[in-house]
Length: 332
Image 1: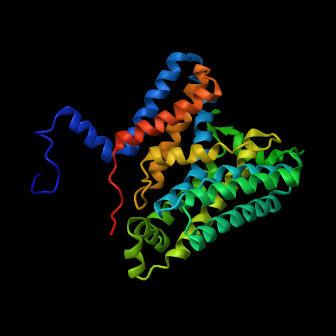
Image 2 (image 1 turned 180 degrees about the vertical axis):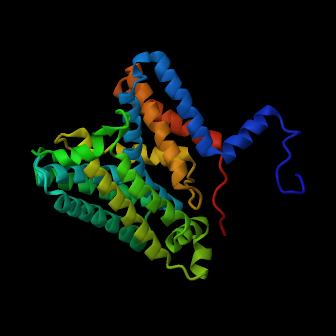
């Protein structure tokens, strides 16, 4: 070890250098893998190299990054939220049935959707804090309840569609058809998420709780309050993603985004956020989202069956977690 505190790599083998790079640059690894997947996809299907496909990659990465941001916030605080997919599906239903294909209902739709997200996040946070049960169990149970409630309210099917104006703000393209309008939402929302995690008092408390909950309590952090707020933020972000997601799929379909709960969590982990809490960032999550979108594109190009798709996604998660070999958060 050099006196500067920087590891001396001169005596390391190539394998050790690779391992050190992977451990310290999870987001970089995700970007490298994303680039390789994009190249492989183009080789397998040269027709995929076009401005429409490029715009779709941007659109889907942003759409996934919004609920994944909520998962990142919760995971940094030592929690786990499996509800984001169910919330997105529920608010997609709310969007279709409230708008009914007519302009002029955006405010009411957004208010109802955010209310759903707030209530689910609040239920998650309060239940986890009050009962002390594992976050995974609680969030999966509430996810199941939400899904069943949507079937009760809709009877298993529903009519409706998003308004043309909302669709334009998501899917319309500019800059010669390359960039989708959903970028506008990212420009507004992403800096806010960066600020919350990097500069706000809440963000600093969240990292402290994830690293060492006992130390956080001793410094005066209201741990229960911060945890509940993290789940509320996750619920709100998932709700908003459901609204713009419905504008993308343009259809009335139950459980349309349920798989986003799995995809968002996978993107967060692949990006480098630790399951132990206290480690991670939103920029890393965005890199993970890009990788997951390009992985999905490659799977589609290869025309794998649905079971094989789940096997590939699961294998990627296990392989990357083993590859990273991250050290856990600082504990007592």
